[in-house]
Every structure is written in C-alpha cells, then in structure tokens.
Length: 170
Image (cartoon, rainbow, N blue to C red; front, side, top):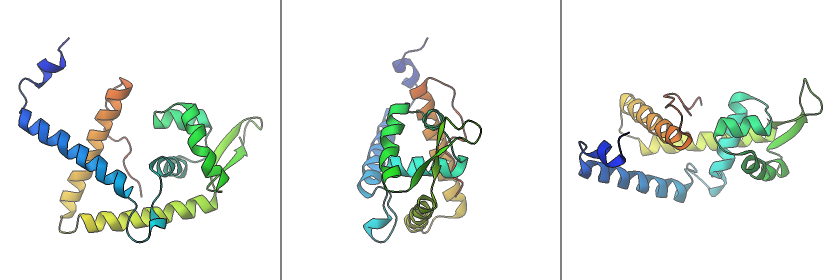
C-alpha cells in the first residue's frame, strides 16, 4: 500500500502548500462570518444548526439516528445540537407516523421561516462575493468545492467518494 509520501511524490509541493493555505484561510473566514450573509447579525446561524435544519428541510422528518447517519456524526452529537433548536421552536419532536412510540424530528414552521431567512441572506452574500464571476465560474467552483468536501468526507469515514454529497438544492 502506498504511503502518503509516495502519493505526493509526483505532485507540486508548492501548489499543495498553496492549496492547504487557501483552505485554512477559507475555514477561518467562513467561521469569522459564519457565512452569515449580508445585513444584521440576526442573519447568521451556527453552522451545526444550519446543517441540521437544512437536512430536515430537504429530507423531511426523521429520527436522531437517521439524522446522525446522514450527517456523518454520532447520535449523541445530534441530540446535543438539536436540543437548543427544539427549545427555540425551530424544530419539533413528533411521534413517528408508523410507530407512535418512536420520536422524529421535524422542521417547525418557525424553523422553516428562519432557515429561509438565513438562506436568502447567504445567497445574497454569495452573489456579492462572486460578483464579476460568470455563471460558468460559479458552477465550476461549486462543483469543485462539492468534490473537495466529498473527498474529505470519504477520507474521514473511510468510504468511497460520493460526488454529489451536500450539493445545495436551494
């Protein structure tokens, strides 16, 4: 099996250094702004909350285990992250439609409205940040970033790379 040293032998170390540096800068900038969009701070949302609300919006009501599996994190983490969303009324716990003993998490109307407010603000931020880019450049960047995120996810989980993972739908 090739070592990581073997895998990088033919690659340009300067380019890899520049790439890792730009990824680090991106991560810092994203965390600084929380990619909160434009406007007031009210348009920002914690990354974990955004990802949870987005998944519930896209896939519908689901249990903690299914939500955790879909996000690649453990159930205890989802439980901890969902608690404040339930407390603030963004997510509601309901009975499973087929098994009344099971509990599912569902985006509340308030959660849907809040998520759409944040999405709208983030769309505006993306439009501003990529002002001057062609639609083709935006699509190419999105495709490459999706591919990069999928490769990171696969590396972390030890599974195969799924090219369409986390592709935005809104």
